[in-house]
Length: 229
Ligand SMILES: Cc1cc2nc3c(=O)[nH]c(=O)nc-3n(C[C@H](O)[C@H](O)[C@H](O)COP(=O)(O)OP(=O)(O)OC[C@H]3O[C@@H](n4cnc5c(N)ncnc54)[C@H](O)[C@@H]3O)c2cc1C
Image 1: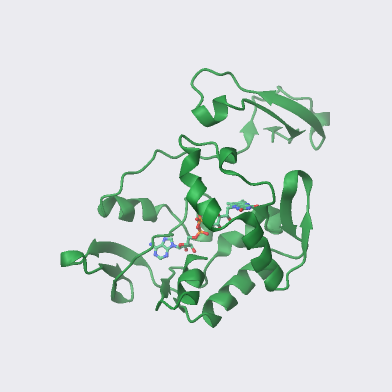
Image 2: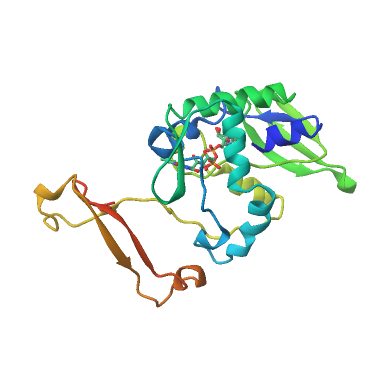
């Protein structure tokens, strides 16, 4: 998205990607149908220490802009519960449209190019980027190397190491979307596959301010074969 936007604004952009093709994680998003935005999205929905951090990004690029972009790519969309927008076709179509648009805007995509290290050039002149395909120099550098979730898609968390090398401070991270596995025998086997609407409350102690403000959720709970989801 960033490469597309920067190219559309007339910058000369090179996207370096270690995998044979970029963005594979998008293909598994939203159960394969890309839950690409939410019509009711607001900064207070972000459960983090500082939800205001998201505000400038959401102001600059609100969900309606994302919806317009996807509409412009001619992809069919449906609204599901709670304002969630999904494609009605495989998420791969979203990836293909994004990559095509990126190229159309003039972005050069270099695959099988593994970034090993990054270093600032003297005098704030930009950055030197060491890759498996040689050295690159650029005036501006965006690290979008992915979270380590689903490393099969290419990201290993190497972006954290590179960001630290440039002097960035890291916020401690943890899996956010994960299954709850219960002890054997906790669940009657016959329940697996059944879902029902529930209210889920959290104990207040130790919650971040964002969660403490809204510690009860009402949504569907699914019994899985080894726990709840
Ligand atoms: C199961 C699942 C379901 C999801 N569902 C949704 C959803 O419904 N809606 C939604 O909005 N989001 C969803 N997400 C999140 C969404 O897919 C991601 O936010 C999005 O794909 C961006 O992911 P990322 O930032 O982790 O980067 P990635 O997509 O992982 O991209 C990072 C890229 O950097 C490359 N790379 C890594 N290291 C290097 C290196 N050293 N040199 C060169 N290249 C490198 C990787 O190969 C990769 O292509 C889901 C994620 C998962 C795992």
